[in-house]
Length: 167
Image (cartoon, rainbow, N blue to C red; front, side):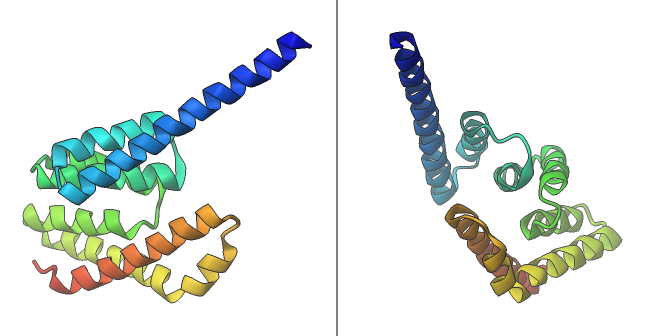
């Protein structure tokens, strides 16, 4: 019985430590984003992926989008393209990744690809904004609702930024 109690305590302690390291990584990510420190943002994104156990899905796609932005700001377009592919593989309708894809194509002077990516960004962002109520009501947990609400706000910002994005 003592061994069982010890094992339960040990498991609880380990999961608490993991949760703390995830929380710390997310906090550090927020600071790097706020400071617009692109190198720090890359490291913070990797720490969130590692400490929170993100390997697939929407949470992973959102964090990889941070790497897209940081790599573009550091003019590391090759890494940004790899990150965009990874982002869209995990979160296929994420407007942020389509937006930055359009930016890369614009900067590379690829008009057709730029127009396609811009259209994809507009469609994805419009979907979030138009379906706000339905998306929020479909969310199963408060964390899901918060994430969807954030994605909707981000989609609205993408729509606004697309107005200024020209070839």
